[in-house]
Length: 409
Length: 151
Image (cartoon, rainbow over all chains, first blue to last red; front, side, top):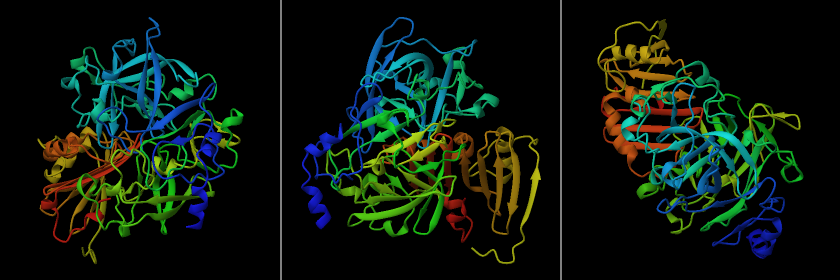
């Protein structure tokens, strides 16, 4: 309690001094003194907000950003807000309904337009592929000729969804939970070499007409690419920088998405410990209460920390949280040990609170945790990112002698 | 579940047989051949007295396991790998029930989905290039079968 009392005396101004970090409502956060959050601005720091998301979504622990998207031919542009920042996927995807009428050139494989089924664990998103020039409006980072997916493209209505693209469809802002997603994960493309050599069900399609889409291979260049890798500089990964938040949570939280790792003074690895990830799956190993879980990962696209702990199964949550989250009677402090493909280990501290008691209107809750039905799964989501800068390095990059893909903090 | 003294056998067969009408969860064990053909995969079968596991390694790299009861029904399925298999095929007659349940608002985001209904349980996890999931029909489970055996 003594520690908490001391931290509570730290004035709001301390956060401003850190540069960009802040929070809206909630208990005074206990920021570790070592965290420095880069100030948004040119040339490589984008402002990012954890908030409720687009109207009606009421997101929790979801980080959003704005992206300017331009037609390379006509020069027409739209800046689209509430795009989810996802270190667990690669590629930019926009919900057609959020594009304010912006038309983009169709991407073809030389013969036919391309379309994609994007698989999620809870459904899939279907839409055409297009080409755009993009700018991150605060940092000014740009990428040209970016292949992206237009989810819910009205030219490709539900009737055109291929049989092997698994339902339910997440083709609306409400179902998707964002106006789009900026996949800045450890891979250069969404599918990679697998889709170059084989037609894989539920991935890429070529469409002589929207109603006649058929599975196809796609070259690496044709695939939806991680836009960060297409920046001229600062293109080897990202850092998600969000301040700590008090145990009660907050209505929103602002921080920074930093582009590049070790390319400038504001994105150095510093004291961070590197955990090389499996180059195929992106997995690391999480050891928790004596059990090693080999399907481990750090993922801003997961809202909570999902791991197996039967002692947290009761008391069970209620309503829509039942079976999804944990609801312990008091805030629990948990510790895991993370390990990549080397012998280096890194301690992961996180908390688990009662998901049923999250204050109405709060979009930030560091104690969000739940069971992981993958018996080997150990998923540290955005709740884990609060209060420490988390690095995600892209495959094939070499940063201070560390080969991507890797995680670090 | 008692497996003491149970004979274990394992063999590999090629994908070539003519497909029956139905495959996947709830279908006859012979339907595994249909799935095998569609996934362009290789098959490894492990049998015990209590059930057999037909493990299909598809050309995409995803491993699909179909659990077949002594009365020759696929009572559970699982998948693990870089892509989610064609769920219309794997969940078969339970697909429509899955879609209806998964379409309801759910709190776990895009990474974790759990459906628990009297006739069907589906657990789906993962992110791009790494997925894990399993599904079973409680009514079809062999006696004394523990769902923790579905790997």
